Length: 81
Image 1: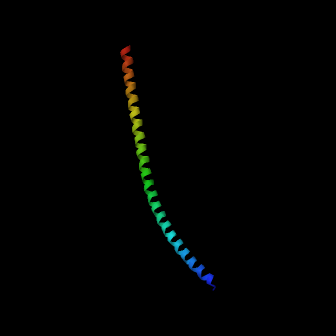
Image 2: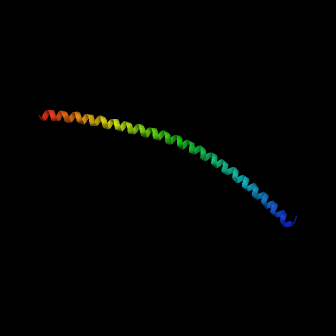
Image 3: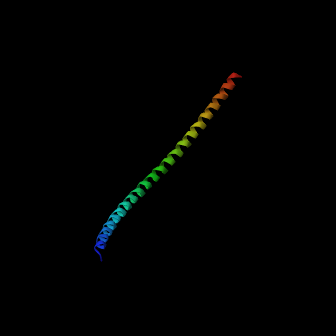
């Protein structure tokens, strides 16, 4: 082995060590990302259900008001006759 070869092996060893540390960090980031993603998906499902309930409530309210307006219109038409 030449003198130049000794330095390249040390350099490669250091590079491998740095890459392994980077992989470890990236795996940790990936795990955190998956956890956050799961929580956000759960919250999104809850919000979708809440939205559906709110829309249904508004539809019922509109139907009730339409019915009430129809009843009032009939009263007014009967009084004007």
